[in-house]
Image 1: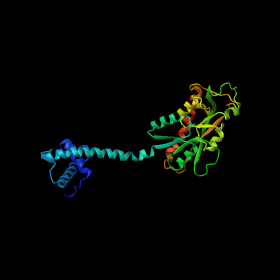
Image 2: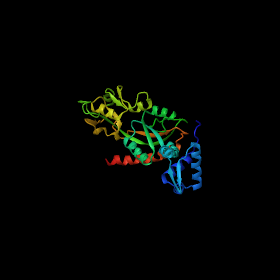
Image 3: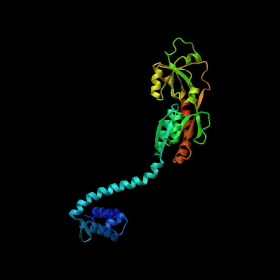
Image 4: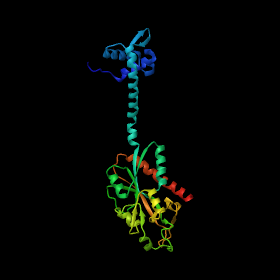
Length: 302
């Protein structure tokens, strides 16, 4: 049996006439003239080799074969409509998706504000927690579009572009039981002899040089694990104040001989030049400073 050749227009005409029972009403719904619809149905019947309608005056009634075909045609038309809707949204969906890789010290309030803003804009936002080294690799391999990292105070050459975002304040934290009997302010020697919980791997040397004091370290880049380690007295931490570690169970702010005034880390945004999503990257870059200011104002009111 030769393959049946039919068109979407023929199926559309068939289902419309079957639904309304007349060429005139179907033509009005589809915005076509009756002659066109009649020709489309005639061509479909010729291809099938059997009649689909019984004509009684101006009314059309389905034949038994037409009734059977109508159910399948109706399902097929629904699939076609779904395909049309999906096809129309492909350019929009491809453009409205962005992946962000962020440093463990990135304020969670900033990320949550960005998630909320992107949701309002119907933009899909993927988030990856990673070190600066991992972030640059992901950006270089087009596995991420934008990064929020600690500044390394070195040239990034032509491989990346960057922009300053803001500074995070830092302080020292530990469980009340970690330094029993030790007089405060603690010396750097006291800190260097006690395990330090860090959120950046030793391989990230530029960050390690700024943040690591102790020769004994415990690594985690997950915030809840960091909290558990400090609460259990496994080590002390040199952490951003926006984590509010002093609110954790049995954890206090430490007074040290270096103090905490003026201790901060600069955060920057980085991205790869020539990214296909440059328009969306630029929009996100424009959003971030305002969100950063908002969370800063919220923190100052706490």
